[in-house]
Amino acid sequence: MKTETQTSNMVKNIQGTITAIKGGVAEVVFEKNTPPIHSLLESKKKKALFEVVERKNFKMVRVIALSSTEGVERGEEVFVVNNEISLSLNEDILGRMFDLFGNPIDGKPFKGGELLPIYEDKNTQINSQKRDNKILETGIKVIDLLTPFRLGDKMGLFGGAGVGKTILITELIHNIALKKIGYSVFAGIGERIREGNDLYLTLDKLKVLKNTALYFGEMDKSPGVRMRIGLSAVTAAEFLRDKMGKDIFLFVDNIFRYTMAGMELGAILGKVPSELGYQATLEYDLALLQERIRANANNAITSLQAVYVPADDLTDPAVVSIFSHLDASLVLSRDIAEKGIYPAVDVLRSNSSCLDKEIIGERHFGIASDVKVIFQKYQELSHIIAILGIDELSRKDRIIAKRAERLKRFLTQPFFVTEAFNNKKGTYVSLEDTLKGCERILNGDFDEVELKKLYMIGKVDEIKQYD
Image (cartoon, rainbow, N blue to C red; front, side, top):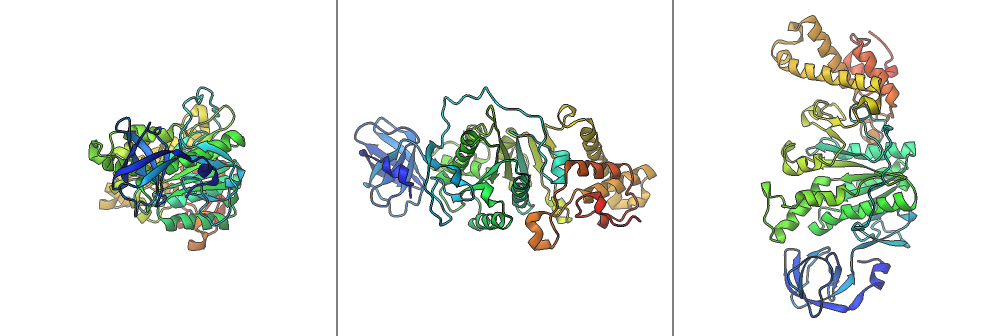
């Protein structure tokens, strides 16, 4: 399926013939010159879509499927639809759901607008970038305290299956819309169709859908679609940033599926794999997407990306490659989630380049550093506590353990997006209230307060009674 604008640009005289097709890859022979790399082709009978990815010789190209290839056979004719995949964009993309080609998938009409290619213009100037050291407040205590980020930064949410990455992404979309900082674009890469539908309904229920454009390439789509849908979302984000003059938040769920799609494409194209089966071009493929997430002279694209960690292994080559592109990393732990601590953040493995006195100020830096020190010492004591009990510790170590447990409870909070599941009203906590609460816990103001009174609250002022 193509937008009207793309269809009108069909170049009927550029015609080729499929000579081989296997596993989502086909070889096409042209009588005259071959079309450029990234050209969009359509088969005559089945209307299957393909993208040119490789030239074998001056008459033959290899193409990857961008739609179902069921029924496509050798000898079938193909036509060049466009010299590149393009999206039709205007401000009406907000509040809507689209596929790779910019076609609406929410059952509503879309008039279309300016046609923009999903691949970056090589003449784009990148030497003029906005850089503001002001920290963005998310209303989520553990993020604002320990992994702060700025406009134009990229933050990754790392974790295995079922530790809360998608919930956290959805809450961030809600809170950013609540603060009216800018618009959001969501890229659903290789995730379940059900999750995309749930996200759409949740954003609509929270009344923030109107500020968000959603692009989906679900897990039932070909690896070509899953590999390209992120580029479609980035193109939409660039349009909103450049043409509408807004700061944009690009949410990606899941960037690991993007690398997996690249690995699948490499395998079916017959490329020699590198470590653990990943494509040899892993770093390049990631850079194609990540390097477009940046600021211009006036506005910025800020990105928050969910990163699936296979087997909870943070040393996986794809995960390591993603780490290198990020300004902040929030690591979610299965062990912490099993204890009922949400968001299940591993404080000691999470970090941010913004944890700098020059950026966040001395007070914030001092409190964040003290919190990390307390958690580090508590981790060192945890084995002793497990064997001998907390009463066998020295008085100083007992105080550290007490405060670490209270900090751990205080950094939990109820989310707006989970209100329907746990009957707890969501809370938005300002950075100042987060710092104030941690400061008081570090000073011992709550050493004798029951742990449950610090669990799943917003500000410390919500504690009704002091024991």
